[in-house]
Length: 181
Image (cartoon, rainbow, N blue to C red; front, top):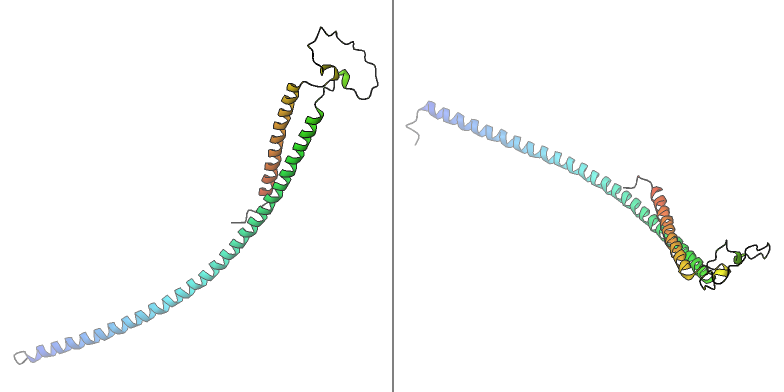
């Protein structure tokens, strides 16, 4: 079939085929070595990655535990502060109730002295000089003035209680270590 080809050409074709076969064998061997190298490198990277995952999981568990401890401490402090706030509000309410029951008196009025000692050198004004108010002679303040003073005291107490609560909360927050994530 290839009789018309010259022997030299046949040798060249044969050599080319042998070179092609050798090249294919070398390339196949090189490719298999490359794949084996990639597999070894990939296995090493996967082992290192698995090690990093275990380390990261441990760090995450430690950080999560710190956060949980912090949250429990914060909840306990919040509950304790709420108990203190409730006690303070009750104390203020009780004092306000007692104050309303007793009534407010003018300490500078002559009729308010409990000691009974001393001389009363002031002469009572005639009834025509003043409006008819039965509480004036005893030093008891009028109901409107008493209500005004008690409302002002109540507002001041509310502000003081809020300040006490916020201050305690601010101090407890400042005490928390900043290393918590």
